[in-house]
Amino acid sequence: MLARESAVMKPHVVFVCLGNICRSPLAEGAFRREAALIGLDADADSAATRDWHEGKAPDRRSIAVARKHGVNISSQRARPLRSEDFARFTHIIGMDRANLKAIADMAPAGHGAHLSLLLDHAPGRAGQEIDDPWAGRAADFERCWAEVLEGVTALAAALKSH
Ligand code: 4NP
Image (cartoon, rainbow, N blue to C red; front, side):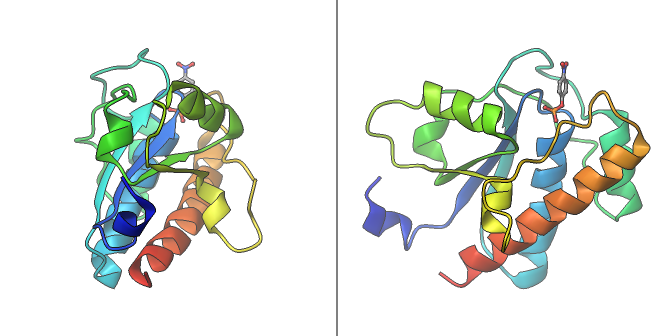
């Protein structure tokens, strides 16, 4: 895709983490709600850099924290990121630097997708990571939700203003 096309194209955003069961499902769910709230016409999906959890629902702790904040992510199913995604999506967004490196490593030559960290979109937080909460406690999932929300809110606003 050419840069001048991406400026006018409907955004297609895929959020990516290691397993697609903790962080990126939260990002997909929170972004969908934020887009609806501000009237942004965008497609959203999420994916994993590994295929370990393919077909699984999000981690119950992610489902719980999202539900607590009014978002239902229970029907999402994990899937790995695929090379076709670099043509299908305008924005491929990693949660941490390892995700971003894995995304960049599998990117086909000449692809047109914009690659970034989620927190690159949040004012003053460029380069910062959303840590994997998988081995953590409920409080880690709460912090993860708050950081994801910060990133997707700023991202949706930026895409809306284009
Ligand atoms: P996520 O968290 O990348 O935010 O979905 C993880 C989920 C599972 C594993 C690691 C991280 N795992 O090792 O199975």
